[in-house]
Image (cartoon, rainbow, N blue to C red; front, side, top):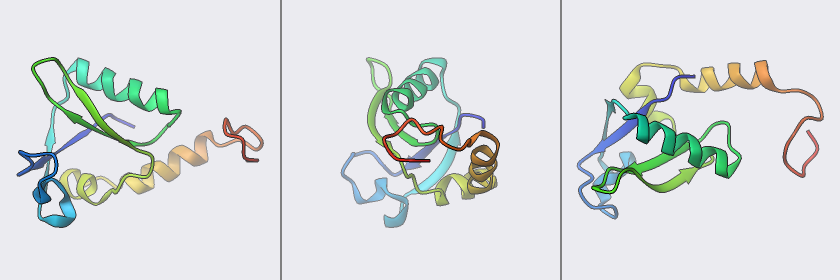
Length: 108
């Protein structure tokens, strides 16, 4: 899958109700810098996640990770991009899943 970022418009303040799509925020595609992409990918690796949502803030000190969502909502990214992200996730799982190869403590 390609790396994408969704920028929530009207989100000047982290705790603003408009920073959430379900509370009136909007989504648009933004181009990630190399540093933003590396930061997001590293955050996912640290958390041991192949698929996740990484909330970044752009700052004078570079990208700052605010949150890593192991089960992100897809409504905003799908509506902004027109992509079937859920379908691509299923394809990724079908291609990469192997019996008894989980990295978690569960049985898979």
